[in-house]
Length: 266
Ligand SMILES: Cc1cc2nc3c(=O)[nH]c(=O)nc-3n(C[C@H](O)[C@H](O)[C@H](O)COP(=O)(O)O)c2cc1C
Image (cartoon, rainbow, N blue to C red):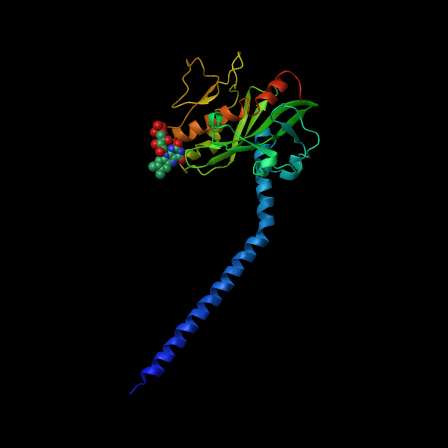
């Protein structure tokens, strides 16, 4: 006959052992995951930087699939711009300035007033980081970081302008969380190509660029400022329009673009 007290003792021991093994296994696994995260962090940061540079080179028209991204990137000139005055800031090193980090620091950022925060930016750094491409000493492209909310996510990209500060050369998005097959049309080369030679501001200086619902028709009087939307993904397209409205407006790059158009801040 079995002894119930002994049986109970054996059961308790088995449970304790099981729990100990489970604890040790989870401790080992979590240590492995934590070490991998720490060890891989520098590589992730380097890859993110490389991807950003690849995107900047792409809109700069300088991306060569055969070339080394970091070497090609040496030809890009970066500048810190004060949003309020639109002038270059000489005492901040563009090589280390991170506008997304600065946006989290209350000292180095400002809240976007709710009434104009159509792109749901929330806060932005007081300064921007812009990129220039020069040909024979003259600015040939100006590259502006832009961001704004689509349907599900904040979309981060670069808008490249011709030297006039008004004609679009290219646009690219390097991070977004829109739906594959719907909102991700923003990264498709065919849609990107529709932006080429579009204009931002009309003769009166009013911002007119817009991703419309449907196709731009030949007789559309605003065809120069309108970009095709994608059926079934209008909300992402609206997000792109709103990001343009904020970043190209007076609280965004407006003062800088006006300086450029006047031939200042070259
Ligand atoms: C699962 C799911 C994912 C969707 N993803 C997107 C998206 O990424 N971008 C977008 O604009 N609309 C997306 N939509 C559709 C929107 O809810 C909305 O219907 C659409 O943007 C309206 O565009 P339309 O007027 O051209 O139909 C999604 C819908 C569903 C059900």
